Image 1 (cartoon, helix red, strand yellow):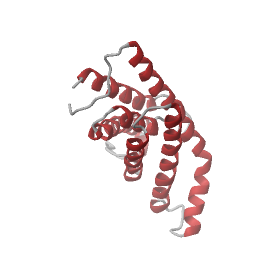
Image 2: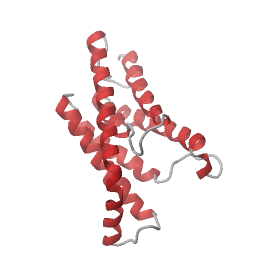
Image 3: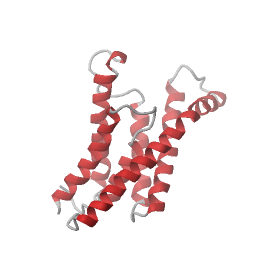
Length: 187
């Protein structure tokens, strides 16, 4: 097993997750790209889910307790909508397991689009279920999804840009350093 490759892939994921701390447009984040990247390069599916979730959770901890601390009483271990956000991460990982068996430009773009759609559907379904803004009816669900449409382009843009950076940089590194191979076994 190549531990160096494991740490490089994990570093890419953590670095991308921490980029959420930089100023950015609402929903322009690397969430879907991180999960797809992990699914593509960690051959052990356990790490393809665990590493992105831990990296995103660390960035959530920092965001919630530094930048958004005024919205929480005390230390915030989890963000609002945690179950739906991290549930969408698990679904994106499943998409990535099947789609990213071979990394190609088309699969990366398709994965970024698919990740954006999954996140949009699942996270806004969670908003509809938990927010007092929308009645628990078909009309309320439609109103919730409709209100979220203006944010979708940032989710899609973030996934496309970060996928391009993550996959492009790692593929470039593989050319420069042929010893980097996908992680095939457990750490």
